[in-house]
Image (cartoon, rainbow, N blue to C red; front, side):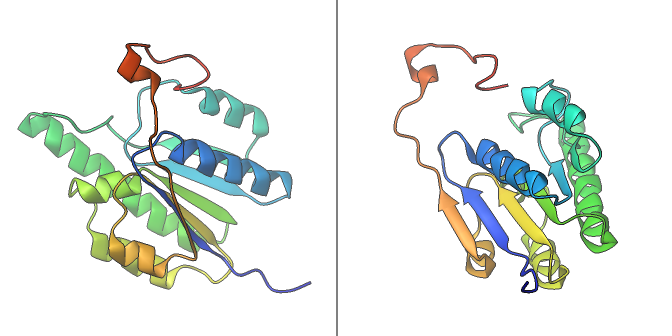
Length: 177
């Protein structure tokens, strides 16, 4: 058996499904006996279906919601809350990456957090460069930075072709949450 080469994987683009694809990858890894941690940088205070599924999967497939919700026209207090939540999420990413407890860590919506200046891209690059050799890191979110794409082993761009919101169809249980 060969030594595991931990990959850097990026799911980006303007289409729906970046997180869903990362979760599917995490589920595949879990099914092969790997320990998976998902740190959600933006998502928080919402009961997504994947949270209930992860609870059933046990301690080897863990999701932590560490965000304050998506960044939209915010007040200075809300902005400070977003900054603090992102800083804590990134601290968790660094700590857990070096802990040796996980085979795969998914940094959900970290590209979005970088895009809005909540997480410095330089610190993310440092994390990628210093990660343990066998750790798989998956980064999701729109507008992945060129510096991250250049360091990735696998990059997938999910492009929106059609979306039900544009027809006035609201979010559907089991599809959007």
